Length: 114
Image (cartoon, rainbow, N blue to C red):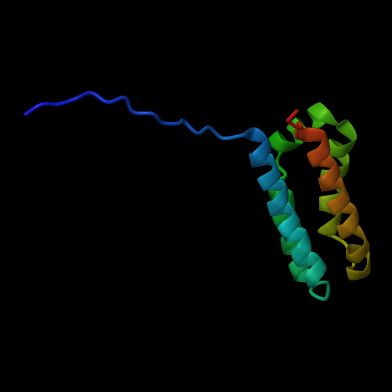
């Protein structure tokens, strides 16, 4: 019986911080879309706002703050405000928060030069 040695090639996949951040923002957006699609239910608004705010924890806020202090302050405040807001106010605030999230991605995620 003979054995031959053949090199094996592989890849090591590591997590990408930018991809993880974008995924987190998408999860927050899903909560906001649920609010926008169900504005008649104040309990749902509060639950989704709580969910979105929980995702935006102190560690994430610190990361955002390194790039943009205004967003690191404004985004948590905007999400917190949804927990105690009227239905009519929520319909106007959700688009504003979605805009803040888009701006946060622009500030936090570095664009590749390719």
